[in-house]
Picture (tube, one colour):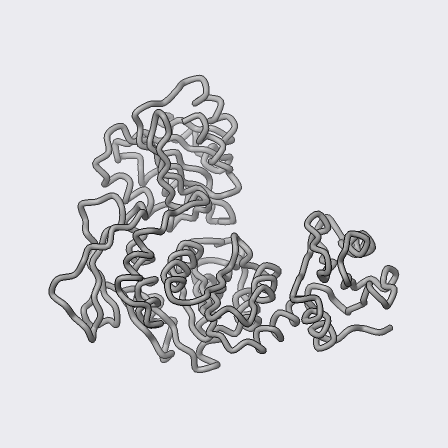
Length: 437
């Protein structure tokens, strides 16, 4: 059997003008189709369909469908895709920034991308392509035209960030924070620390540098002796900032250790929630390090508008919605609630959805959230089976099993003149209620 090597695949990849596809529903003529397997499908069976649809080659790991000409055999399609991506990354001389963490990975990525794009040709992870398939596809999208790459890395088990860091080989790293996300897969908070800090270990191995929130003692402890560029609220940091407290959006001034000026312009962002302050400051720090001028940094941050259900403010005909339903865990949920409760809005309403992938910690963490809002005087609605299990203990609140049920309620009983925080895990699909608010 003639298994194709990484070098042979790379020659094909180059000849096919770096076009890759993994979905026969989205074929691009002249591309290479990688026949990946999933729990409920085996794309080896679609190899001929890919060729018939215009692909130049199909890469398979089932010798029964390999014809040796256009349908080529490898030992393992996923591993071949990953090694091809790793090989391609090594051919490029551009700096790579790796990002991981429990919360706000995508927000960091988008803010950093906005700032760096003021000066450089940047390629950043698209959408949620941040896993063992998405990261290789992201790396394989890089071309000689790009000057900086921003690679987002997600994980729900130990060892995954180590794999993704090995593939992308970042020169710089950012861990946004260590929080209570994917507790089930990581095996508790200590497992999360170990898993997320795998990025630091890769950076350390190649003597790279990290951008670090130096006010975060957990991150400082995990970072050890790695070379650091620091940001936070202390004047001794490389970049430090001051949050303007009297706005629901993040407004701040910032300065640098080596260039302190007395009068600083206020940067007014469209980021709702003071918990986004440190995310914004990270983007400023990275932009400053890569010599983006101050005016351009500030302009990028003021122009950036959140979308895709992440700290997104949406005004409807009847209400103002703060849509933060892309993901949720106990850490991010707690911060969102604390920030919202402090705001001077009239007629506030919290719609809180289940936090998924917490395993044995699930019941306890959901009850902690209810306890957090119990005495706050806020109107609260809980959505999802996990919160619903606690309904009998908290008769003062409304509980719905699904977003569809809540949508039906709002369709019948129109809410008006409310400011509504919508926060929950993506799987709860809280965005379904938006059209009825």
